[in-house]
Amino acid sequence: MTIAQEFNLSELLPRIYNNLSLINIKMKNYQEAHRFAYLALAQVTNTNNFYQLLFSYENLKILFFDLHLLDSALFYSERINEINDSIYMHGKTLGIDMLEIKDKYHAEMEINELNHKKRQLTLWLIISVWIGVSIATYFLLRLKVQKSKLDNERLSREKQLLQMDIEMKSREVTYKMLHITNQNQLISKVINTLSTSDEIISENSNAFGAVISELRLHQKLDLWEAFEKELTQLHPDFFANLTNDYPNLTQYEKRLCAFLKLNMNSKEIADILHLNPASIVTARYRLRKKLNLTGIDENLNSVFEKY
Image (cartoon, rainbow, N blue to C red; front, side, top):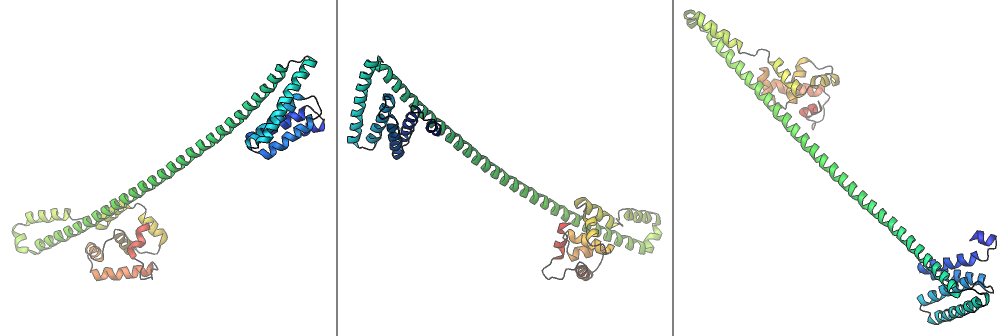
């Protein structure tokens, strides 16, 4: 429109104004439609541009009809009839076929209508695609959140099962060590009894010597080595991490830490080490001090859960 004004294109400006007026009528923007229609009229007044004049009157007729201003709509309808008559007379004078002018007018109106529908269709298509993408994105995000939740629940269950399995195996190691300890004590008691029965041994020295040797073969003298092997299978890095964090621990204190790692109580530890339970209580107290556990609520067993 600026180019048309700059070069004073008298035929182009009315066409632009009339098209803008029609577009605004379609958009129900009647104030702008009215303004552009009158701008078009101002360009074609006192000219022979009957086609654009007819276009302007047609726009104004439709506009006032939509606004229910029937008198104004009738006025421009009458102007249209007058223009049609003028076109007919002008066509006869100049030898121009009035039907050709009308056909051209209606053809351009149809083209404008088609272009308007095309723009509407394009707009709806864009909106539909945007809605479709938004819905798809929403469901994808929802599925992702649900999958993440299910994965977290699965990992939590697996962690719980693993912890339960470790605890069960820890108890198995404890029971196994206690069983071996009791077995060793029983064997030692039997060997001592047989060894002190001089009268029986003197009569059956070879037989009792063989029995005592067999009993000693079933004793597990290095009980700690067996326990350390079992613990390492459950917690491979326990002693390495413990030594790294507390390098000043003695061998006995490390063994006590290992028993506590398996949640053994003082009596169980005392049975395995052939000590009085009171000695274990004292050893635990000293270990707490060495590990700088001064709080009352700090549980000694819980310290070793991270190892």
